[in-house]
Length: 354
Image 1 (tube, one colour):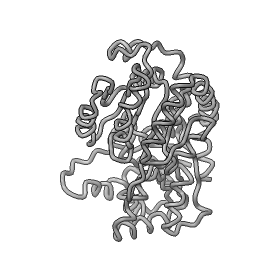
Image 2: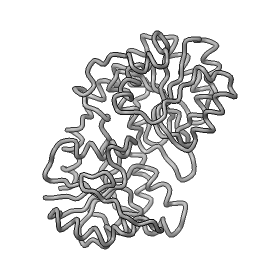
Image 3: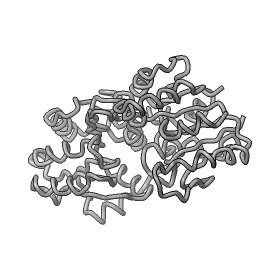
């Protein structure tokens, strides 16, 4: 059976969705062809008018014929669900969280997302939390499959990395590094972490907050770092390479995921939590969305209520005060990451389509 995956996000994009989809094509597999702005099959329409996705409607038939595809796979139910409905092929929808939460706020988007989801032969979701949202569209539960994302790298890709590049650049040797990795948007709760950092510094003067990622919130967050008075202890890395991101995880004492609950938005899973486990790093995360499925409370990390700075502060101080606890949780994360490899993910995905 040959499949065609059509997606706006795919490596070298570095977001969680791109990494998730990249894992499907991490090894050469003649079953799967990928059409995206970055390839392997380039879909980059020269179209500057709204809606930007419209050329897909007339490009898709030729893409299907060229690859002999029998099943269409789409990521992002809207807008690609429109093309799937018109393709004439059975199709599968991959849902990540925000892509199904946001359309519920507008009646016409809710209607068309529901049509596309209900007519899909299979809907693959990244967590039970995302599954609950999809069920609200009237999708039959028998057509839903929960498949957890794997870490961004396999253990063999990580290896023993020297902590020199970022450590030297930002003087992080012998520092207690707290890492946040992800797109800088309100849902990520980076502002909550910045709010409590002065109190963390009161107890641990060697604490540093490392923020990896870009996004529209960056200017506001940089100003907040100045306002709280510890700008020198907050490091904004911006968009970094895969190698630098692995270095950042290696340097971290703990990884923070202080995600927030917002209308029409959700943390569908939290692939960064899976990545932290690969590096044996404990995670402190909000108990929201799919994060409780990515972080096992008391086993791979600690869960705190969303938008609760006091609880987040207490968890951070507790781990910084107890290296043995941090080590134990990190080892738990490593064991969980070893179970969720890219190979097992791909196998589970294609088995779900049979």
